[in-house]
Image (tube, rainbow, N blue to C red; front, side, top):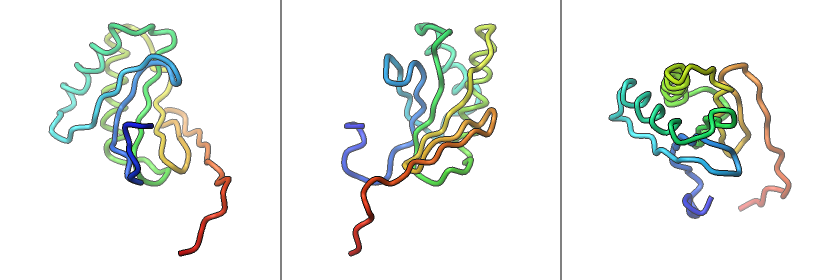
Length: 118
């Protein structure tokens, strides 16, 4: 969270590992092609426990699928396949909640503090 600073826009970042535990963060770069994304994720999985390694993407925006979500999910599916295992899900997190692109599950955050008027 500290990497995001105080801006409301969160840079699109793919994380792979254990949420709340050891994980790798890979910044999204629009110049990456599908093969490079899969290769980078395959190498990232090499150093992780495949039984607990989960891919999740953090980004700005609504809880609807975006282009980067599908690009990284395809790469993650390929990387897990190269390791001979299935992908446990592909989660996208925004400031409004999260959704799993694999099964369509969605969770929305509730605002605890009332919104202040300007």
